[in-house]
Image (tube, rainbow over the protein chains, first blue to last red):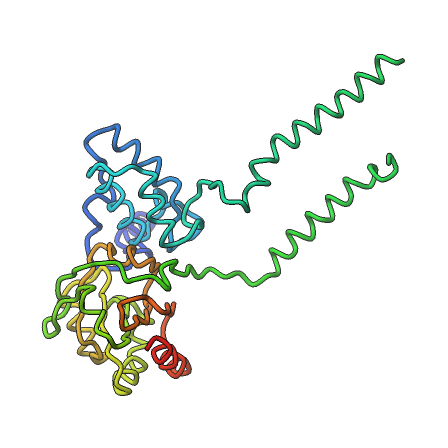
Length: 136
Length: 175
């Protein structure tokens, strides 16, 4: 009985992330009726970093500001804006940091080149081995 | 050549250890600065957030005289802590406008009654839309806007007593 009561009490608590008394923004937790648009919005939201809890995407975060960002993204997608345009709008304000998607910025060139370099190194090793085997 | 290659994995390993150690011990900076510093204030129009102060739009900010734009909320504790400093700035002759984030008029009225009202105009940004347009990521934040309506400086977090003279200097620089 006590246990049930304790459990019921936990249901009464306000979530710790409730930072305001306002209800969440209209499209924060509501899907766009058009599934194609919702897919686009969702894909974008999963790659935009939450500014409040910085290691979550806004799709995963319960912070009020993340809710407002989700709502704004859905509204802009419904208005016909392209996800990449919204991403660059956010990057222009918060820097590359706000996007989880790596960009083509020069600082990331080693990252993009790494697979090719590693593959080349592997091929070089392989060639050496084959040559040695052919000789023996 | 071969002798050198043998040492390569160890060297790589040590390089990674060094990289991770420096990342671990470097104090991390989680503050997100707006990229709009130095650029014109984005255009916006907001409804009034308080009963006794007019609404705020970006056109009110380009008046030829530098001023402050304070981002606050009635539900934000550090905003209450910085209220005396804003009052001191106001007494020093600084014009301060504000944007209340995710707020409601009765709450803003109550907050201003309790902690004082240094603001000329207060706009209500119920969905953080203008906050995002400004590249601001939390409350409180304070922007120094120069006479032409450009963002000259962004102060992140509450203004402490020892920040007041620095803010005044920034305002003078924005002249």
